[in-house]
Image (cartoon, rainbow, N blue to C red; front, side, top):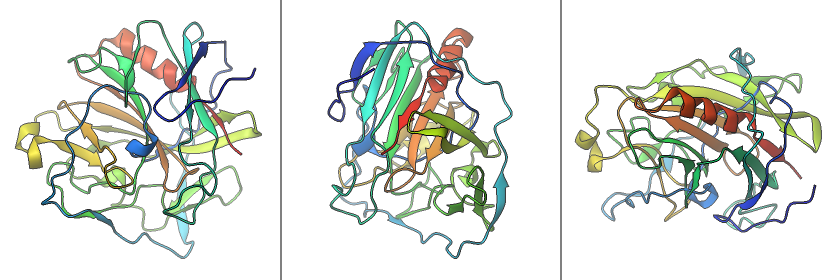
Length: 293
């Protein structure tokens, strides 16, 4: 079924259709506002007094010994009756002028149930409310080692230095421990797991890295730098950063190695979110389909 392409920040709407259950292998990926999915809130821009963060040099040399096991949780049933949105790659192929690295995907589709909202950055339900559930898509240069006390240096994402020893497995750098989202200060993080995102261009799908993280439940976010708990920065100057707005918030992060930096899909819910809405969020994750070049 042909779906008209759409400009960034203007995802295409179309009737949803049933999808096969998503293969277990979604990957944590970081992303910035240049690649964000629709949303509503505008995060405060970094102040002029704060120098632009630099990314610490990742491990190199191909010494990968941390083998990521497949996700062993329940396979989310995708949304069947809803609206499908297509997020088109904002910088395909070699069009990205700021890097020699090409982006390796055309678009991502996901389906949302009735009652979900579409904003400039976030797609979700009860956006901006205490019981919000939301999904967003990012490309980002790196993450803050401490989201509350942010310095000028960013750390690479978990997937930055990795290999595929047999084509079907993700292996992280041998010194992976203590790095990436899983090592952000104060965070509770699950062990990384691999998932497969269905891809009509590849029978085996696209591998991704999956993590679950929570914001410290007792943290007063207003005590953080600038009164903001910020997990990662945008990819370029002026790109919106990713902020967490509620203590105890849970983020399911998928990192996918198809962009200038890992492409990140972030699905979040809050302590006040209902189980029904959280189940819907999981179904949206289960509906994700990626189309590569």
